[in-house]
Amino acid sequence: MKKLSTLEHEIEDRLVLGLAQAGHLCLKFISPGFPGVPDRIVLTADGRVFFIECKAPNMPLRRTQPAVLELLRKMGHRVEVIDTFAQVEQILAEVCA
Image (cartoon, rainbow, N blue to C red; front, side, top):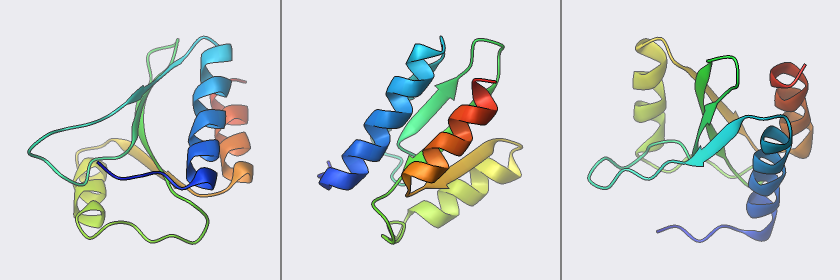
């Protein structure tokens, strides 16, 4: 299991807390045997579902992640990669509006 850097952990915590405070779920996504899945699955109170990969600022995706994220997008799913608090706030403003 990957070790989160402090900042990545803080970004992820802010996302989870903000969504929870608005009545949404932001579940940790771990898929043994299928590496590269995003960190979180977001289930909104109004029925939307999307995926979020949290990173520390300027950290690249792991080797397996680009293909998995693209596969999810091709299947019609929304997938976001965030690495700043500003991006967290943008998602919260959109989802919690």
